[in-house]
Image (cartoon, rainbow, N blue to C red):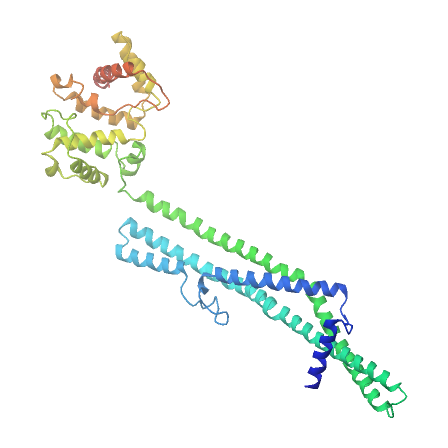
Length: 446
C-alpha cells in the first residue's frame, strides 16, 4: 500500500512538473513502442476478417474454431449432397441424372479441397496472426507498463533519498545516517529491478523488429496457399469437363429447332432432318388437298405442342392428321429458325442473280451452278422439300401465297445486305418459280 502511495505521489509531482520523469528507453525503442500499437491493430483486424472468410467456421467462437471439424457443413458439401440425391431420384438413364451425379461428385471434391485449404490457412496464417495480435504484442505492452511502474518506484525512491540527504545535512538532525542509508538501499534495489525489466523489454522489442520478415511471411503463405487451392480446384474442373461434354454429345435426344442442320444430322445419324421428314410425310398423307395450307396460321398452342414433340423426336400421327395447318406451320417454323438457311447465306447473291436472268437457258445454268455448290446435307433436305412441292396441285402451286416454295424460308437475305423494297418484292415472286424450274431439271437429270 505504501509503495502504491509513493507511486501516485511521484506521478502527481511529475504531472505538475515538480519532479522530473526518467525516460529509460532509447528513441529507437520508443518508435518501436508506437509501431507495436499499429501492428496490433492491423493484425487484429486482418485476423478477424480472415476468420470470417472461412466458410466452415461461420458463427463459431475462437476457442471452438477448427477447420478439421467444422461447426457446420460447407455450402459446397450441402450442394454436392443435394445433387447426388437428385441424381439418385432421376436415375442414370436420364441425361439430367448423369449430369447431377457427375457434378455432385465434383462439388464434393471441391469441398474437400476447400476444407483442406481452410485448415492450412488457419494453421499457417490465422493462428499465427492471433498469437501475434493477442499474445506476443500484449505481453510486450504489459511488460512496458510494468517497466513504467518500476521507473516510478525508482524515481520515488531517489526523490525521497535526495530529500533525506538534504535533511541529514541540517545541523538540527540528530541521527540522520540510518534512515538515509535505508533509502539509498531502496533506491539502488529499485534501480536494479528497473534495469532488469528494461533489458528484458528491450530484448523483446528488438526481437519483434527482427521478426517482421516472419510476420510478413504469413501473408505470403496466404497467397501461396490460395494459389495452390485454386490450382487444384481448376485441375478437378478441367478433369471433369471432358466427361460432361462426352455425356452431352452422346445424348441423342437433343432439340432440333434453332440448331444447325449439320449438328442435328450428326447427332441423330440421319440424312434428312427429322422435322422436315416427319412434316413432309404427314402433309403428303393428309394435307395435299387442304386449302391455304401454308397461308392459314395454325393454333398457337397446337403449333407449340407439335414443335416440342418434334424436338423430342416423337410425333403422334393420329393427333395431327386432322390439323395439317399445324404440321405446315411446324415445317415453316423449323426452316425459319435454322441458323443458316437451307440454301445458305453464302450463296444468296448467286441465287438472286440467277433467278433474275431473263434468258431461260442461261438462268438454268446459273441456278444449277449455284445448286452444285450447296453442301450435301443442305442439298438432300432441299431435294425432299422440292419433291414435296412438286406434288402440290399445279393450279394452287402457281399462287405464291399457297405454294410451299413461296412460303417456306429456304433463303434469307444477309443482314449486311441492303435491298430495294421493289426488288425484294420481285424476288419473292420470281425466285420460287426459278427454283422450281431448276429442281425439276436438276433432280430429273440426277
